[in-house]
Image (cartoon, rainbow, N blue to C red; front, top):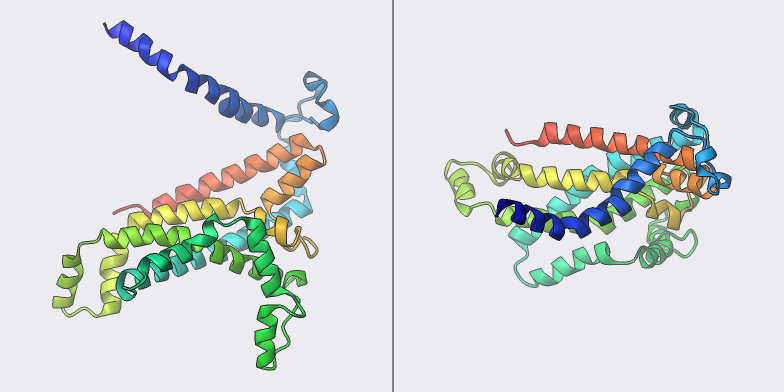
Length: 290
């Protein structure tokens, strides 16, 4: 009976195993092997004629000035964007949970709508907002006598503009998770703090935030992974410019694939994977429940 059950179980999971090996494990292992070779686009017809280069592609990537610039841009985007997104999301969640009682569902939909909106539609909106001459933002600044810059063509303001767009687009997802976490905290916890004389900020800082630790961990990990791979924002809005000031690691890797430098591109992808794994591990160590 046990052997028949085992055989039946394997028959049931066999389609998944085949699809996983063919479309996930196989390509991952193949790309990992490619990162240690000099394979280029011209070698696709003779893939077994390529030569191994060891860690040469990884060293070449680390020595590439544009790749280092892309790594700096990505770090800038993550270090500023992730905390800002979480703070805005938590603030919106607290507002919906404690302050807004009427039309709460409408606000939830409104805040979450950018998450499911096409990046092309968002790009059109933000190009209008950030346009140098007749843009909405510069028009408003002009009312106060301020001459706004060309936001997306400025080395100083292009990345902050993309960060603002990313925060606006993505905070709704974290907000929904924070809102669920807040609504899962018993009301008696806050009432006990109030009876002990704790003010609103003290209750939030010393009672609510510690109880939200698992939620903060989840949102910080998922948001951080997404921002480390940010691609759509510079690809659609600035094409990596001006002067590579908004090019990201994912975008530069994509460009290398387009140039046919498959070995170099896969090595860049795996360097990004290692960074994501290390940062995620650090987040788990810092934000885990104590």
